[in-house]
Image (cartoon, rainbow, N blue to C red; front, top):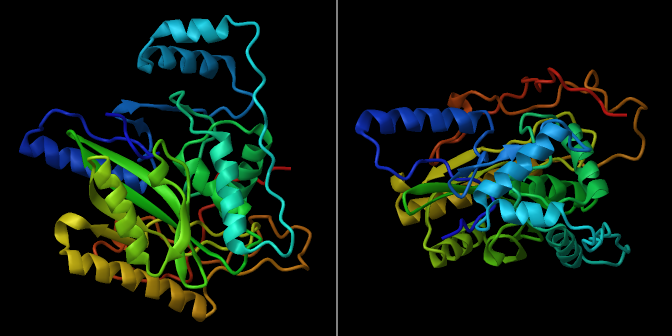
Length: 351
């Protein structure tokens, strides 16, 4: 059965010994800390294009070899496509443009329609490299490139694109939601962009499965939204094992903050149903309090200094420390380090 989400599988199908299981768990946690949890796809490792665009020749050839290994028709499908001289021209979706009178729910539908039109990437090679530790301004540059190239995307790319396309919706709160599920001996991961407008929750994203991507903002509570995803997974014979919730993302496209991906980590094996619901609502309250105190996502300002996007400016912005001890597992509130500085090593402003 194909994986229903848009993320990756992590574990081998065989049953490991106790020592191997502990070592695998530690390795998995380390991978998640480094943001590498999405490097498997339905039990098969997939590649990430780290050379940028246009795709270089070695990456191109590696992609086609991988397609030949994972596609049911094998190398024949690659030969048929690469040898065709009359392939149809693929239309390029138009980035949605809104009138001032367009409501937020209508805008969200248009954004989701655009993400869907880009289509899910089944090639086994992710075209855009997403580094979760990168400052928000750099990720927004990457999202802009996605709109120019109009290539198929995976779920993590869809989240970054969703943030970019909703930056001007300043009354909309956005936050990442990650899922870990289990099916047939494998663990699978998926991520969507949670949204909150007028006290109602929904989601944007992309997936192989229709019910694991867009959710209109109609859910009265965060727990209702998550339970709806859980039920969708159940219909796909997947068992939800863990949910990770981030904090609200800034609306400032020039922010050098990092996205806080894992403020709350809820392990369903360690929580009763009622405790799970309470922890979801506690996270929702945390987000409301953060915004209410003025520490939430700032709105873009009209007057900016010329080099406001430089990583040498505005470095007082808070960010999440990347150590394991800083995460909030199964209901423990994560301490806030307001003096922490974003890691800008290797980051360069794209001109």
